[in-house]
Amino acid sequence: MKKSFLSFLLAVACLGAPAQSPAASYPFPRTISVTGTAEQELVPDEIHVQVELKEYGRPGAPKVTLDGIRRQFLNTVRSLGIADSLVNVVSYDGYNDAEWWERKRNRKDQLQASVTYGVKLRSTAQVNELVDRLDPHATQNFQVARVSHSRITEIRRQLKIAAVKAAKEKAAYMAEASGDRIGETVSINENSDNADGPVWWRSGGMMTNTVLQGPRSEDAQEGAPGFQKIRLKFEVAAVFALK
Image (tube, rainbow, N blue to C red):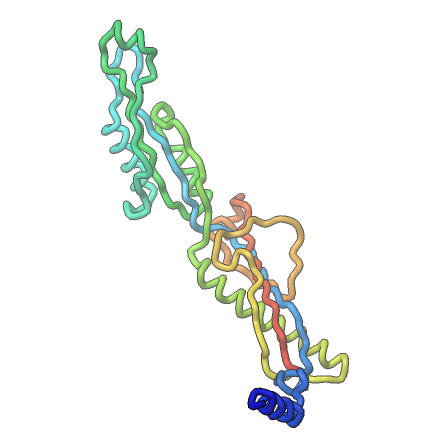
C-alpha cells in the first residue's frame, strides 16, 4: 500500500512540472553555419640538403681518406658563408665493396668509409654554389631532403586568424541577405588537416575566401628559378547566432 502511494505522488509531481522545449533549453535557437578559408604560398628560404661523401682511391695513388674529405667539405661550406651551426652529421658508414675471395687473397684493408652531412641553405643560388664546389670523386649522393620557411609558424598563426575573419565576414553578408544580423560566436572548429603539420606543395588552383601575399625570398627577388612554392591552407567551420 505504501509503495502504491509513493508511485501516485511521483506521477502527480511529473504532471505538475512544466515541460521544457528544446528551444527553451538552447540559448541560440537561430544560428548560421559557415566555413572560412585562408591560403598563402611561400617561396622556401630554408632548403635542407644531404651530401654523402666517401673515401676513394686512384690507380697508383694512396687512398683519399675520409678525414681529408671531411676537412675539404667543411672548408668549402664555410667559404660560402654558411655557419657551422647549419651543418650536422646525419650518418657515418663503412663497408668493403670487394668480393669475399678477393679480400681473402689480397688480405688488404678495403674498407670504404663514408659520411653524410645535412646542410641548411637559404636559396637555390646557394645550392648551386655548393654543388659546383663539391669534390666529384668523393661525392656519392646529393639530395634536397626537405624545404621550409623561416617564418612558417608565424604565418600559420596569421592564416588561422584570417580564416576566422573570413568566416565572420561570410556569415555577416549571408545573414544580411535574409534580413538578419549576426550576433555572438557560438563555435569555431578548425578543419585543416595540415594545421600544424607538414607543409603542402602547390597543386591546382587556389580557392579561398582570403589569400595573403607571402614574403619574397632571395630567389624571388633576383628572378632566379627556385623551388616549387609551399602552399599553406587553413579552413574553419564557424557558427554564429542570429539576431
